[in-house]
Structure formats: structure tokens, C-alpha cells
Amino acid sequence: MAFLIEALQHSTREAILGALAEGRPLTHAEARLLISTIPAGDDARDIDIRKRFMISGSGDPAEVRASLQPAYRGEHSRETVTTADWLGTHLIHAQHPQLARGPLPLMADAVVRFPDSPAERDGIWKTIAYTTQNELTEAEHETLHEQLSAHVSEHGEPFRAFLRLSGVNAQDPALVAKFQAAYVTTVDTPDDLHDPALPVAIDAIDLNGRIHVFDVSGLTGGQS
Image 1: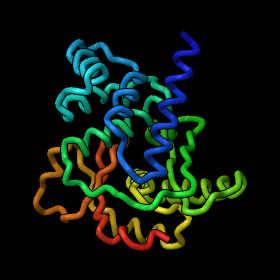
Image 2: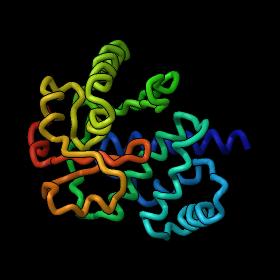
Image 3: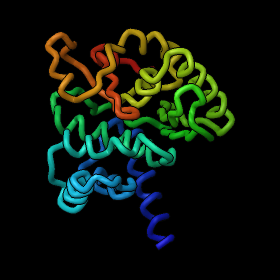
Image 4: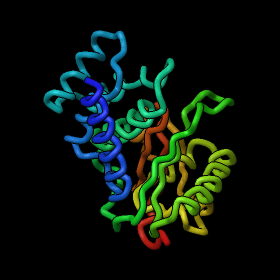
């Protein structure tokens, strides 16, 4: 059993890193794998929804995403919360196929950095995931991670979500300016993405059960 759990965790990490580096949402097969690694809650309906999605890939994306929300409450691990984020983003795109996603050039490096503990201020596991156009040494990643952590502290969860957008290069010297130009709003439900006041070319990232919305029309060219 321990070997099986370790194999599932490895496959989950590979799925997330692959999607991050390739600038794409999870595939449906990857999403079914990920949901199998998230501990089930106590609600019988949520358990049934998740089991059906895991076995057959069927189900309403909004309902499946709603069944994941208990993963953000209680004493769940940083890996569980991060997996729920990626799966939630996949389900938002399944519900809203008009959202802008790739294809963009493959990034040379993709990193998911887990924090040692939840943030003291709000108790959130602030996992930082990002891509770079160049391969970096471990020392270079450490320096970059410190810089990105400082930006997250200053700009909050929307900046952490921005780093996960397709084609965003964390080494970009204009990274903060591009974030400020792209960030639109944060909403609570996928239905809010139907708002006609939103820009045409938007993308959305799920973090801790909230949806961060970006105008990506200015990001498609030159993520240098």
C-alpha cells in the first residue's frame, strides 16, 4: 500500500509539472488521477461525485469542483491543497472552454516549491509554482524563489496565481508590471466568469477555492 501511495504521489507531481512547463491545463486523464489522491470528506454526495469522476471521468465540472472544497479546510497537507488547486483550475476550464489557454512555447524549467508551514497570517499553504525560459541552477532557483515570495507578500494571492498562467516567465524583469496590467479581479464561483464586463481574452486560476482572473491579451507575445 505504501508503494502504491508513493507511486500515485509521484504521478501527480509529474502531471502538475508537465502541465506547468507545457503551459496547458491538465488532461482529463491527469485530472482523474489527481482526484484519486485527494482525501475524501464526510459528505456522501461529494464522495459519490468524486468517485464517479475518478472512475469514468463523468460529472458536472462545477459539482466536481465544489466537492473539492473540503480539501481547503482542516488539517490537509500542502500537497493535497496544491493538487486541489490544479484540479480546480482544470474543472473551471472544462466548464468554460472559452478561457484562453496556450498553446505557448515549452518552458525550460518548471518548479513547484512547497512552504514549510502555512502562512501565519491566514493559514494558507502558499505553494509557489513557476516556469522559466532558461534552466537554472539550484542556487539561482533559491534566489528567484526569495524574490517571488517577496512579491507574493506584497501583491497577495493574485500574484501567486499569475505565476501559474501559461507562458509567464518568472525571470522576466517586467514580471510585476505584467501582473499589474493583467490582473482583473478575484471571484468566488465559476459562474462569475460569465460577467459581460470582463475582458474577452481572460484566463482563470483556482487557488484555495477562489478564482483569480487575468486579461491575457497582453501576455501572448514576448514573455521574455
